[in-house]
Image 1 (cartoon, rainbow over the protein chains, first blue to last red):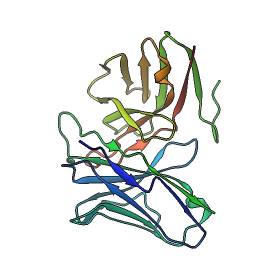
Image 2 (image 1 turned 60 degrees about the vertical axis):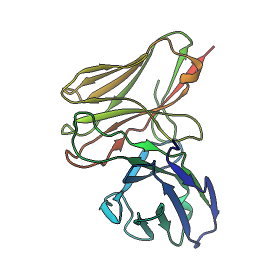
Image 3 (image 1 turned 180 degrees about the horizontal axis):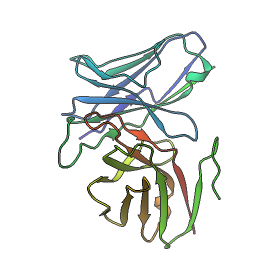
Amino acid sequence: NAGVMQNPRHLVRRRGQEARLRCSPMKGHSHVYWYRQLPEEGLKFMVYLQKENIIDESGMPKERFSAEFPKEGPSILRIQQVVRGDSAAYFCASSPSSGRTISYNEQFFGPGTRLTVL
Amino acid sequence: GESVGLHLPTLSVQEGDNSIINCAYSNSASDYFIWYKQESGKGPQFIIDIRSNMDKRQGQRVTVLLNKTVKHLSLQIAATQPGDSAVYFCAENPDNYGQNFVFGPGTRLSVLP
């Protein structure tokens, strides 16, 4: 039972290029979350998606960043015209469902993509 | 002591001793909390969770304590082992019906032989 998969694990881009980060949730999970982590800091929520829907993008920068989770295939976090400040580790997490249950749904994290912008 | 800003607070513990990692959360409306462990180069790994209607929850070698009055969480690790060396984050869910978790800044636990 594979966990959350992210690729690439490491991505180097020059300023102005585009970065595409992919996340395949755990089997049976239909909820995906993206977080950004700067060195020596905690994770910052970016966006929460279900299949074909963006549920909460309150943590996503308004410009250059976009995310999707199509009916088929992985979730994609896209960063256009990258700048040095975009250098960070980007983590994806998935959960089987949302809502309030007796035991909240744990978010399972992938290994992350480390983006370096030169 | 602790430092803020660019460097994570660090807790150094002797192998075999108990560790206590603290976290202050920000939103009094948060009703669900998780402790995560993050090893170098890896994603966060769930350790234990607690809801706001509880003040204590125990797992295997770990205990989470919740003090809602002062908005404080702690993670206690019994008989700390070298494999416990990692960064530990608390996360709170401030939105009663959402999935947006807010992570604390983290504490680096260093286990000394």
